[in-house]
Amino acid sequence: MNLPIPTNLVLGFLGVGKTTAILDLLRKKPDGDVWAVLVNEFGEVGIDGAILETEGAFVREVPGGCMCCVAGLPMQIGLNQLIHKARPDRLLIEPTGLGHPSQIIETLTGEYYRDVLKLGPVICLVDPRRLEEPRVMENVQFQDQVAAADIVVANKTDLCQPEQVARFDDWMGSLQPAKTAVFHTRQGQMNLDWLDGATALSEVGSPHAHHHHESAEPEPIPDIRDEPWQRVSNHGQGHFSLGWRIHPETVFSETALLALSLDSHFARFKAVVNTSEGWRTINMADGSLSVSECEPRELSRIEVISEQSLDADVLDNSLRETIGYTELSC
Image 1 (cartoon, helix red, strand yellow):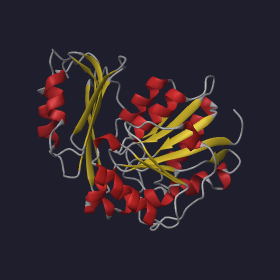
Image 2: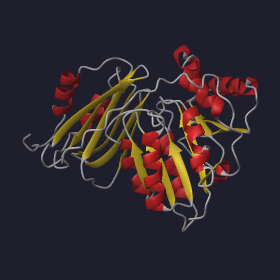
Image 3: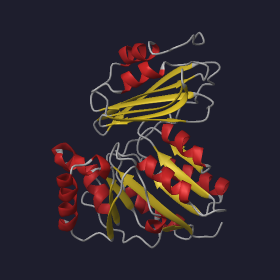
Image 4: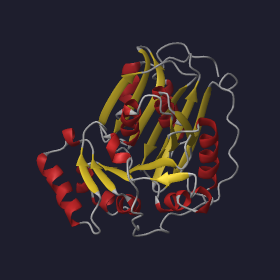
């Protein structure tokens, strides 16, 4: 490990494809390099971290909301442990899509990490289709993610109409100060060169807009052998999440689970799960569903995020109804 460690933030609103983009970068990293990823999820069960580990990176999770809360303490603990364990050649940080970037950047460039980390270009992914939604354009977190970015990348352009991409380009051209670079991509395909350089430390419009909350000491996670069906929840920033940790011998009907994932009330459905067709990674955002094979895991993880309050018992029963084979008694 050479200090300071090149470090990049990968920002983006909920469902834009940040994890897919980081996976693409990990697949392209130079041979022999050790990369580490600090990932923060709004939910509690750590699905993005489980997905990123498939590419051999050292991953540390800060689950359950924004990593910058409690004066950055959860983030600093996770970051320190990751640096000590991985001794990485490069560090990527993926904050929650519902988080605010300014406090994270302030921590990374502060006195404690000044000689440890070298913050490179801050990258923000944007889905051009979402620019048609006033609730997205008016969202303070979205505005400040874009404002903090040095490089803005239009992702999912293969799903966009030409006029949607043109609207994105017009919007980028209107921003002041201008971005270091603006790119188009699809399916999260990234260029390693985008990580090089330094951040301009652009100011955000509402640096104190994020509501910090005092987090209680997290409860110890029960052993999956003792509690083979674990349900957890979280809420904040106008969103609600329900997550499950489930014993790996519980097998779900893939067809039934995919049907459940397309519920119109869900903003996101993510899973790394044992199904009747084998272990699968499932990702649904904005009605777009992707499914891929993955290696068996120590447990299944499922997460639902919604802008509406979720009936936990009803959804839990619906999930149990997708079980394709006999589950362990719980």
